Amino acid sequence: MGLLLMMSRKLTLIRRKNNIQYQMVQINQKLNDIQKTSGVLASDNVTLADIAGMPASLFSQGITSLQQGHMMGMNWANNVMMASGSLFAQYGPQAQQMYNIAFMKAYETGRTQYTKMLQAQINEKEKQIEQEKLLLEGELETVKEELESIKLKDEVSSSVCHYGLGQQ
Image 1: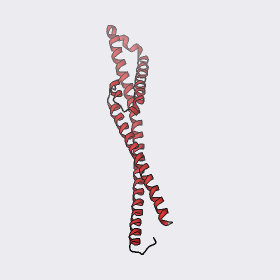
Image 2: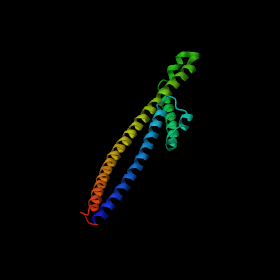
Image 3: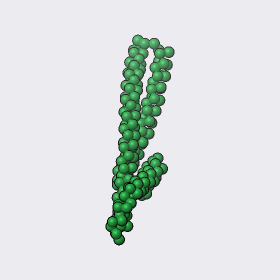
């Protein structure tokens, strides 16, 4: 009966070890995807080609972030331009050119602010995934140790039975 319980526990531990290893593969894939996304978003000028190079699991998030970055840049620029609307009248014939330059600078500032916010969110998610990975690695080590102890008990039990000292 004891041998049957030990074998059942051994099979349970092997199944648990395989599940943990599968989860580790998934977590490593998530971590890899997050790191690729972080690399793409770290550049100042994210383009559709950059988004197309992102992992498939995060493609829609990349498109959404591109749109939101554009919208935040436009909102930022419009707010700045409304606040300083009459300032450009003093430049006379070059007022439109000065307005366009200021608008583009404000737009870039808005996009940069959005990128920083998004980068902080991605870094936080990366930290969470790293913590999850560490927990699984610890659990995997525990399962491996218990499997080793069961294998050792199994070897001792089989060698004792070999010499006629144990039950058959």
